[in-house]
Structure formats: C-alpha cells, structure tokens
Image 1 (cartoon, rainbow over the protein chains, first blue to last red):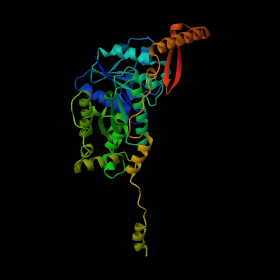
Image 2 (image 1 turned 135 degrees about the vertical axis):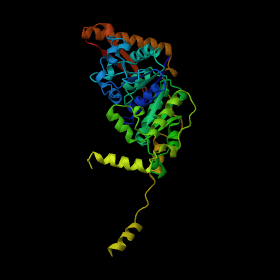
Image 3 (image 1 turned 60 degrees about the horizontal axis):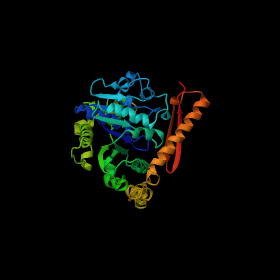
Image 4 (image 1 turned 45 degrees about the vertical axis):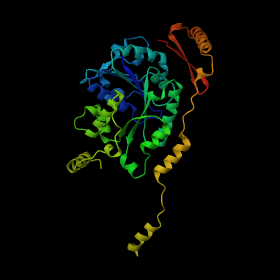
Length: 276
Length: 96
C-alpha cells in the first residue's frame, strides 16, 4: 500500500512542482514504485517539468468523471518504468473535481504503488482541499522569505484543522541561500523552524541547475552533469521520507563548492549564450 | 579634493539594520512562536447530527438543481466545506 504525500505551500512559486518531480524521480530511481499526481487543474505544470507533456491522453478530470480507469490515464516515464504521472487538465477548473473524487482515485492507485506524491496548487481554496483529501502526510514547502513563511503557517494551521497530526506535517525549505544567512541577510533554519513549530524534513539550496533541468524537461536527479551536491541533498530527503535517520545538512554542506577549473568552465558557459 | 571626498562619504554612511533581525522580528509579529489555534467543526458540534443535516442539504440542492437544469441527479456533485467558521457549499453540475 502506497504512502501518500501532498506537497503544499499556500504561496505560489516556491518550488512545489519542481520538488514533486525531483523527489518522485529520486524515489523511483531507488527502486520504489512511484506515482505523481498533478492536482493543479487549470494551471498544470508537472508534466512539463517531467518532460511528459506530449504523452498525455487522459487526465485526472477524465478519471473523476468516470470516462476512463485511473490506470489508463497514467503516463509512464520514458526512462524510469516504475515512475508514472497522473496529469491534470489545462482546460478544466479545480471546481470540477471534489475531495471525495480525489480520495477514491488515490485509494484505487494505492495498491499498485509504494509512494504517491500529490502536487498541490497554490492557495487554500478548492484545489488545496482536493489535493490534501487523499494524503496521509504533508510536505509544506517554503522559501526563506516572510510571505512564503506566513502562508506556510496558515497552511499548517489548515492541515491541523483537517486532522493531520503534528508528526505528519513536515517542512522543506527551498531556495536556501547559505551565503546570505552567513552575512545576516536571510532568516536561518532555526528562525523558520521556531516560527512554524514543525520538524524540518529538508533544506534545498538555490540552484541554477534546477532552472536548466526544468527547461530541458528532465528532473535534476536524472541529469548526470548537474550538481552532485543537489543530488545528495535531494536523495537525503528521499531517504528521510523512507524513514531513515539522515542528519539535516549543515550550512557549509548546502553550498556548492566548485573547484577553480569548474568555476571558470561555468563562467564561460554562462557567457556563451551572448545575452550579456 | 575629489580623492579625499571618497573617505568622507564613507564616514557618513548610515548603519543599516541587519535584514535577518528585521525579518525575525516581523515574522514573530506575524506568526508568533506559540502553537496555532485549531478549531475543528466537529469539536463543538454533534458530529452525527452535522452529518445528517449535511446529507439533507446536499440532497435538497441536488433535487432543485436537477429540476432547474434538467439533468440527472447523479451528475450533480455537492460538497459542503467549512472555511474559518463559514460554511461553503459548492455544487458541480456536469452538463456533458
């Protein structure tokens, strides 16, 4: 039976979709049977980040309306056969599906997968309630800025209201900039943790590699040439989700230390496009 | 003159507040450091009665909408949600 996680935040643009794609892919690379559900109906993106946008035939709405079986709507990943995506529709709206529909669909999927990750839309209205309905645990994503943290606090309150116990709500701090924390320009992990009063599942540093991989439609964990540190950090979160006791990286471990040659190489790579 | 003015400008520069301290102070004012208040609707209502009444309301809406829009009752989904003490009723009518 699958363990179901919802990735939520309240605020938009904090990296829910990117993290859903990368954590799901990293989990599948470890041999687990993984399904990703795009619950962001109307503003779907998970298929684009996964590079599966051209393979969609049926969507979540078709399944909710009984047009097709949930397993007929799943899109299997090109390279990783144990990774599937249940895509969302772009022309539908969040109101066309109910929390009960989501519970039913997820229950049907549970038997064939080990892990299910639900990508929640921004906001706390209908889309949020749909995405959360079938989940057992929540990963609240925030960036280290005040608007994202205050929205995360509101979302945690709503999750608790819906019956999620404290130990079922975990925090992931995304786009963390260690050098800004060192210079006193950004909140540190303890500041965020004490404000939100929940356990930290992971810290993901800000990385240009994420933008590059998203543009290519290949999750970062599948890219050989990308940062080894990011691979390590994302795999650390995946292992924690599996129940392993992996320590949270220290500030110094969050920084991608490039060698002299690598730094020169990336400098020239950046200027090759000729935009600046 | 120009060379020495560089040093005089530096001396008069204001001491800026640390961004982290300012953010921490504002975060504390916005969120606080205590536990969140949790109000669950079934904590202060008879859960069984609430369930019965909700089903009754849903049925009534389904019937009315079915007559009004001339569609099957099973094509109408009614969801009742509680948002901060307000009850929100969403009726989803599938015309297909």
